Image 1: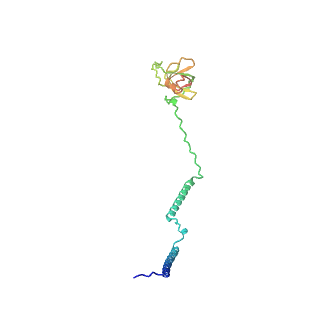
Image 2: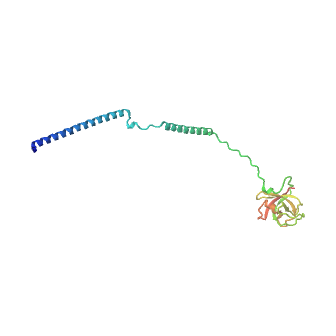
Image 3: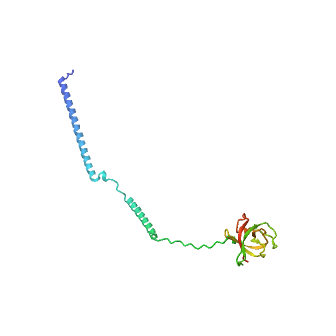
Amino acid sequence: MGHTQPSRRAVRARARRTRTAIATAAAGAGLVAAATAGAALAAGSGSGAASGATTPPPAQTAEAPRPDADAAADERRQRAEAWEQAAQDAVRPLSGTATEPRQQEPEEPAEDAADSGADTSGLTPTGEGGACEASMYSEPQPTASGEQFDPSAMTAAHKTLPMDTMVQVTNPDNGRSVTVRINDRGPYVEGRCLDLSTASFEQIASPSAGVVDVEWQVVG
């Protein structure tokens, strides 16, 4: 059976119907999408309003100082104030109180090193004495008393004083003195009246001097 060819008018009418159906469907889809978006927007606005009622603005949500930190700061401040007050209390009794000068105890006179080589206890000056030069001798030799000369003993030679006479010899330049025992004769040099052993001479002058001016007196 043969088919009849549709007319152009029928084709155009069918195309218009198709386009109309497509446009209608698209419009319906647009309305549904718009309704859905509106509902979502309404729901979002509602939840935003609810959350706004319970959530403070960002400016009000700043973290408040912690009570523990405030308590620690207060404790440190109070401790510092207590220390400062204690220091002031410790200093206050001292203010206005004059420090009494410390009294120095009188020093005992030091023993003269020059007298350390002879015991002068019980010796009394007789009034006999004078001033002259005293020399030093140190070579071991027999003495006029019969003793062997000892440079380390506190002895001396004199031309006329009796043997075993005790004589105090003083160097006026330094005030040092020594007491010696006469056990020999001499010296036989003009201007000299005493010849001291090395040890006794060292008590009143330097051995390098050899000769010094002295004052002497008999003490026993």
